[in-house]
Image 1 (cartoon, one colour):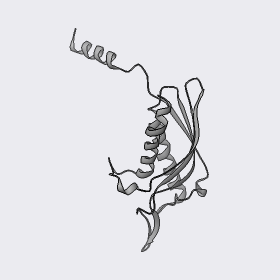
Image 2 (cartoon, one colour):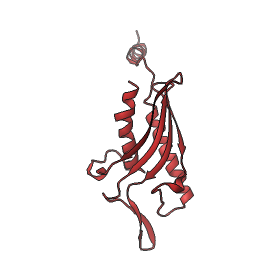
Image 3 (cartoon, rainbow, N blue to C red):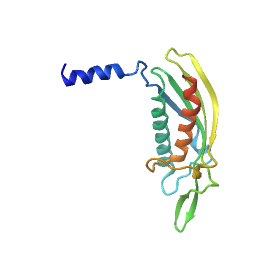
Length: 162
């Protein structure tokens, strides 16, 4: 057997039998009613679109950990971003301090590949000690909010699938 054929055989034998590739569909409440999605130095509309894009991508990447055909329907109902927007001279800046901790509220519905309801619930996440934890990885937008969502996903939701 050639080296290439050996590699192909090894990959075929070690590939898991379950394909992981669920999907997420994210809906939004009215961002104008959310507790704190206030931009600092940009237009509200552009900032809100960026928030939506970032959270939709995050839920989509998490849903890829679900078995194929599983669907996670999310409706985000409130966000209170870490930090607070304050005036600093002539500009507004988001200042992140421990007293301005992140909060995310949403409801979800999880269905399997046949459309059977696995679970649904209203979720309210917050992390009052968000600055006491080590910040892993690169510095990305909405890091603290994404972290509490990821922690919920791996700690709560994945258990309901296994």
